[in-house]
Each structure stands twice: as C-alpha cells, then as structure tokens.
Length: 151
Image 1 (cartoon, rainbow, N blue to C red):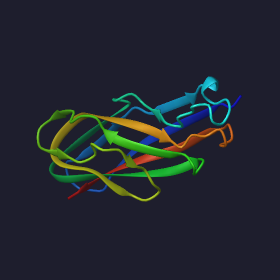
Image 2: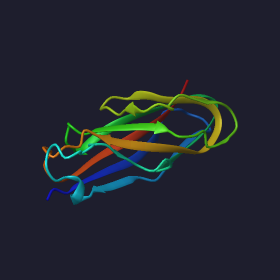
Image 3: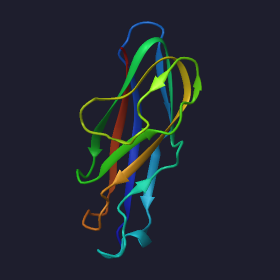
C-alpha cells in the first residue's frame, strides 16, 4: 500500500522597517491513509483539506500592509498542488482584505492579503490537490513563506 506524508513548514519574514511584525502559529502534517490509495478509478478524490484554523497568522503594522506567500519546495512532487485561504478575520483593529478564496501556492511570491492595523489569529486553511495513485509513496516536504511588506 502507498503511504504519502505531506509536511508544510511555515516561516515568516518581514520586509519593512519600523514597529511591525508577522507571526505564524501552526503547521500541517498529514498522512494519507493507506485505505484511501488503493487502485486507480475507485472514487479517489485526490484532495485533502486541513482544519479551518490549521494555522494562525498575526499581523501588527499600523500602516497599510501586504502579506505575500511563496512555496519553497524541500523534497516535493511537482504534481501535488498546495492551496491556501483565510477562513476568517481573526481579532483586531483596522481592515483586512483578500485571501477568502483559495489561492495556489507557487515558487514565486504572490500577494495573499492586504490591510492595516493589528490583526491576531487570522485562521488559515490548506488543501493538497492532485494526489494520485501514480505519485510514489514518500514523505514530501515543502515550506511556505509569509512576507509582510508596507503597501
């Protein structure tokens, strides 16, 4: 039987100079059950979804800001796609926009959400798509980098 393990490492970086910060709490380690991957054509969905609050994002910057995301493959199968969206606003003051629809993570930095002010516990949810019985059993690892920039 095949056993596939997806590991997402979460890291954050800051590209602004003043009183600001970004913090990521959580990760997603998922083992696809052997019972899910048996034979081709047996109603295998190929999509796995994390909990709605798998990772929390905190952004603290009183001016306008942008959080960008990027996937950095460590030991990854290119056929597997990782998608991300925010499932709520968290708590705080100021505005937050974007990120409500799933966005595919790629190996280039892309804009995820914008806002201003203090926002804590913004819940994020992941999906792994295109899982297939044709992908070799292996522990696949990728890193997701969040970057906070002034807007």
